[in-house]
Image (cartoon, rainbow, N blue to C red; front, side, top):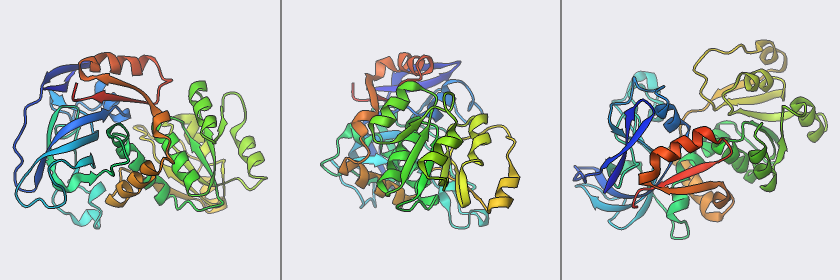
Length: 338
């Protein structure tokens, strides 16, 4: 069986996946599908070489079947279909204030530790969430990014009847928009890629290209002058940061979802003038996976529409190159059983 191994220098090689017997509290999985996300692309480009040991199986958006359980495991059984919450909690620290998902000693499985883009994968049992029979393993591979969206919307305190703006219409931006819409909010999605705009519009979202129309005026028109109650910055771009403070209403919230590796100029006067809140959102918690599974099983996240292509693991290098060359796609999955 095979594994996708990051070897550095924009190379994802195909190596051998060997089963590791689970220790106490661990589970060995037969991985079905693994999605490729923005973090994997950062690894591919070499931006995370300080954290990634080479060669390393990467990937963390996983659906799988339980193949073997270690001693003391009671939350899953052999044959269960699962999604993986790829966080290995370290020793508690006073710094964490009881939040291990962003804790000082957290290790991210698939970056700091071997990931799931391989056939055999051994992980802590507490990372596993059982999938309902109604949810396919293909859709199960999108539970992890959907949990990101559920976490972001929860931290943004989105309520029914509110106006939300999502800046950036990639996989996470679209999922945030769909989760916020499911909460009963009206969503405006800002995106510069026309293919993604068409997809967003077909999913019932108000889609705006800020290169072709004024986003602030579009939100003002949609909201009858009320502007946005919650804004999600998902683009990771300078224009996204510049416009995010122009969109909220009084006591509106801005949720920072994107990773901005460099400091950005921010209009702090807007926070003073309108009593705005800026909320950081990173990763997810157990409840976010539970909500993502429930929403996915209900069909409200339209996961079929978000899967661009499923490729065999032998095609992993070409798949990464395709994503880099063609930004139109949404979610590529690697078939780890192929």
